[in-house]
Length: 157
Image (cartoon, rainbow, N blue to C red):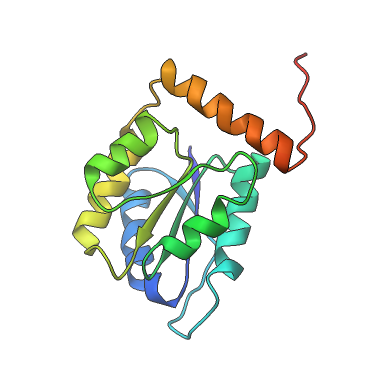
């Protein structure tokens, strides 16, 4: 069973609950990392744990929701190996996976409606990375991470 970590700030609470219900119907185990009320919070406090789990490989995919999605995207993309994509329609959700192999989907809870959010998650969930020229581009991004984040070179066994 696939596991997806999900988190939100106060602006994304209602949308997160809708997405969780959808994912559970799809047979996905949802790891809810908060917040679970509408009190104002700082989005990094919730985006960081999800990005950390994806970066470490503990969980392979995540979903983050804040007011616009911008803050969560910035936070998540600070972690090596995270490819967080802020999407606002199903085409972007598909391209995020097919071309960029996005492992965190970010949604603006105040930007898109819940129905569209579900369709974007569904599209991203069922799309496949195309590899080829797109892998070559991701490899270049990985080199930046190795250089600037001082990630140790992984050796093949």
